Length: 113
Image 1 (cartoon, rainbow, N blue to C red):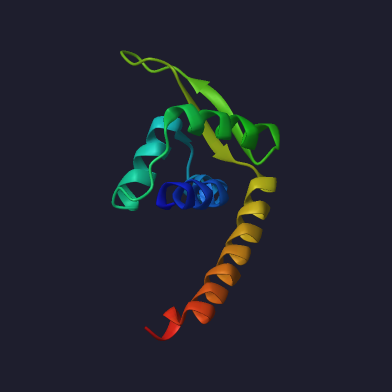
Image 2: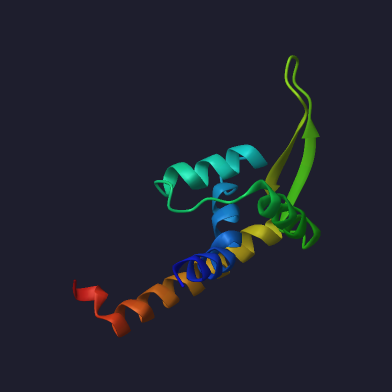
C-alpha cells in the first residue's frame, strides 16, 4: 500500500517539483534528479527511466525548453529552462498544491499539530 501511495503522490507532484527547480536557472536531468533526492532527504527519488520521459512531456507542452550543451572534457548534456508558459503553470500548480495541503491538514487535524 505504501509503495502505491508513494507512486501516486510522486506522479501528482513531479511536474511541480521539476518546474520549481527550473524557476531560477537551467539545469540538466541528472542535476534535477539529484536535487529532488537531496532536498527531500531521500524521501523522493525518480528513476531515470521515469524522469526523462517526464522532461520530454513538459517540453512538448511548452512549459520547459531544452538545449544541448557541450563542455570540454564532459559528455554533452541537455539543459532545461522554464518558459513563460511554464512560469504560469508553476504559479497555478503552487496555488493548487497549497490549497490541497491546507485541505488535507484541516481534514486530518494536522494544521494544529
